[in-house]
Length: 587
Image 1: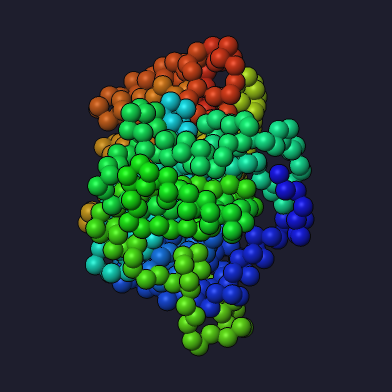
Image 2: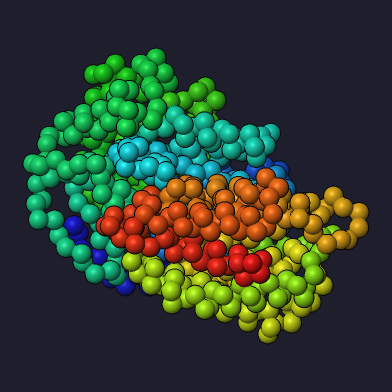
């Protein structure tokens, strides 16, 4: 592990790097406030906007892939950390248009939740938005990855190149582009190998490898464990042979995600994780091609270089893409981005104007603001009373839920829920904007979603916020069909709740039986959808909550807790949700 850096304070490293990228790339603009790189020539009304992003440290992915024929924009988080919902929203507002927005991300929990929540907010604001989650790793097989699915790796770059070329044609709808992306992902496989973990600038040194004579196959791009370690380090030809076995073995039920025949059009990407010297890396690329040809696989396209790095990772990855004729044409189409081959210089840009967005830019486009109203209304007095009961209940239950969470988590579930409840009460009773909504259900839900987003940390906060925003979007669509104002009825609440649950299910693999809030939420909404009474639905939620006691965890920190602890307490999130529902419904 290399621990020496020229810059040892990571405080402004990402911002400085983005600024440096913009200084050397005359075709993009840098938005310092939201850590985004955008293509100012993109017209979101003429072609679908493609936005990507994720944690920093993988450059040129994704900020180096912004340009004509590739990404419309990319937004960066801190090193190995997802960008915030605010950053993503603002990026959508900067470049999105009436042709629709496609958010293309790698399959990591933070990215999936944040981008899905931003998508829900964008839909509520009137943007036609879809999310494509890319998972191409084969190192961690089906048994271990479970419902989470494959990790996103360098193959994401190939998917984005294809989508960028198709979008540039201007004749493909958002739905068609999303389907093309899914088709590419379903024909994509990647595996990596590394000699050691990487050190993050400004972070403590976790410890050096005790045995330097080894290589880890399948190590993730955030230092995640791989599938196995080889000691001593084998010859490079043997290592590559083992990696190709994982990619090509159709009989490996755990890892055979794609089926490639020798007659298929195979595109090969050999990716430098950041720390392999150019001369060594070129030799590695040659050996990969050689090993494929020994197996009678002849790649029709070969891409070699640092497309997706892991800081200065001493490793590389191999990606195989089974390509249709349309995909080949898209990969061959010209693109102007520094992370994809050579970037041509565009005339008319000087040092001062090319580095970032102009200071006098209209900042009204930096935020998505719905300001939408609906024909559907709620009784403000009844809503306020319901919210107060629910919040008071969560505050009262804070200590007990924290106690439950201490057994199977990090002990702060109750505190997080109570903090959010206090923030909602503050909004209800101390903010004039709340009482100025005149009963408009969309305004109330949008406000509640924002309070939750800003105060409820972690996965639960993102899921609650996605639910509230999707609930608002569904009610807005229902209300737009009405000719006059009226109070939301039961059927409309149920229809919107079903839609909101669907949005949550798109953002998380959690389902009934995984020991999460879904064990209470899904039975509640399912009962309502079946026409059962609110009391019966709430009882179904309580039974779902109680069923989590003794249930094995499939997701979250509880996965790492000894199984004996699962039998002692129910899932704290499910307990909190039922407490919330009991207060809202006064039952």
